[in-house]
Amino acid sequence: LTILGIESSCDDSAAAVVRGGPDRAEVLASVVRGQADLHADFGGVVPEIAARAHAEVLDHCVEAALEEAGLALPQIDGIAVTAGPGLIGGVLSGVMLAKGLAAATGLPLIGVNHLAGHALTPRLTDGLEFPYLMLLVSGGHCQFLVVEGEDAFRRLGGTIDDAPGEAFDKTARLLGLPQPGGPAVEAEARHGDAGRIPLPRPLLDRPGCDMSFSGLKTALLRARDAEMAGRGGLTRAARADLAAAFQKAVVEILHEKTRRALEIYLDRAPARPAFAVAGGVAANGPIRGALQGLCAERGVAFSAPPLGLCTDNAAMIAFAGLGRLAAGATDGLDLAARPRWPLDAGAAPMIGSGR
Ligand code: ATP
Ligand code: FE
Image 1 (spheres, protein in one colour):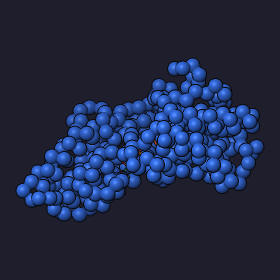
Image 2 (tube, helix red, strand yellow; image 1 turned 180 degrees about the vertical axis):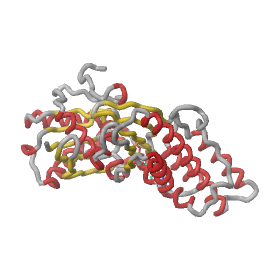
Image 3 (tube, rainbow, N blue to C red; image 1 turned 90 degrees about the vertical axis):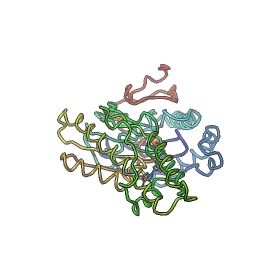
Image 4 (tube, protein in one colour; image 1 turned 135 degrees about the vertical axis):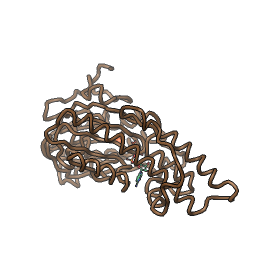
């Protein structure tokens, strides 16, 4: 099967072509047009600007993806589109385009949950078998999911406040380091002493897989002010020590909570146990190293999809759509765009039911 995927749920307009089956597929083309420059002056994504930009560039993305794949629409078997969750204007831009293409060509239309796209990516990149444990850790997300099937996700826990990527970005701001904060803090931490400045590990002593990062951020602010007091500024050594202390706290929280999530997951004795970490924060060396080490101890295969397939893209949407099409789960032209669509409430939408 060859599937065209369309993604427009946040600030990336994307189209991709994926070919294969639900267990293994190849990305023939993946085009992503970011909008970061359009939103830069506003300190965040402006929904109206995003929706307008998607409407302007999405069809070019589709053309570019088809060209890159060397295919024309008649050679495609289905059109998959993100139907939510996300900024509703953007999601609608994609859904309208997909409906138009489906109506014009008679091709099946497949509404995909954006989060399912992220969660199924390790199958596309590493062929992981169900069930696998996944940690999605990015600028906006932090959650453990057991991926049990194309349409079956069990959430074990996640952050109750900030996402770690956001905390890395705030830490960089507090320390006068550039954005995005993750790589800058990681580099700074290499020269620091992670043991000198004590920082809390919120929720670490509580049972379960839930996490919290906002207290860490507040503690870092106080520790920074204490370091600056009487010195008129932050010394290079203090900056490095703060970065190292912060990163160590995040590593320890993720390590401990992943250990617990693995326990719950391994309890069900999966035939080929596997763990995947995805999202921008998975690029962090010490975090990745800690999680990989944990998996090695437990005899669990470790996978970390390449960053280009962890951040928003349409290849993951096309691949998730491929699975749904193979299972006969297509949608009608009344496919609804959904601003909210939790994964573990059942990924299969009752499209048009208004649920
Ligand atoms: P989401 O997709 O969840 O809505 P997002 O688009 O911000 O959020 P990503 O693009 O996956 O998420 O990740 C970006 C985040 O990853 C940023 O917060 C960035 O600081 C963080 N990040 C990137 N590299 C590193 C690193 N080496 N160490 C820690 N954090 C990192
Ligand atoms: Fe995303």
